[in-house]
Length: 182
View 1 (spheres, rainbow, N blue to C red):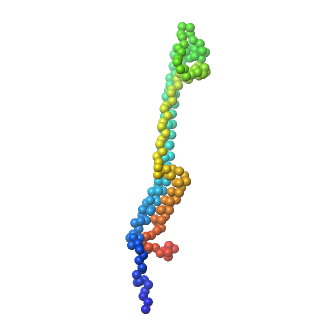
View 2: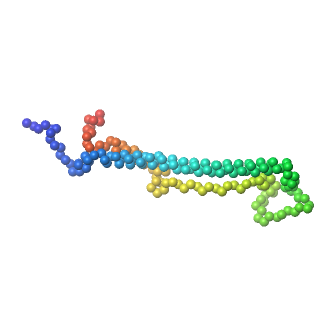
């Protein structure tokens, strides 16, 4: 009488013991895929955040400079009606006239060669611009450079998703049968 097929031992293939030892090799696939996806998503956002922080610092410096300029201009305007010497010198500057007992001091290397710029009272109260900030260095370099470019990042995201899918779908124990899927 023929033997029951369920009692016949299955033939072992070489290396089958390693595969049936457990699902240990699928876990690194999923972790590697999730890590790659996280790098592809977070690293460009981190660089964007650093660029935004740089812009915010630059705008805050410009705002501080403008506030100081407004304060200097306000002091100038409050002094103008009460200070007769300042008013007289402004009139002389605008009209290009000088009192006889006063002389003109010639400055070496005068930067204002334009006559209208020399007459302007704004040169008296203009503050120098703040020093420019150093551009932020790119965060990623070397191996991380493809993560900041659009096309390689798209491919790496696909590889990460494929690794996660392989880690979820592949079962090293061989317990899943095609009938279990449906």
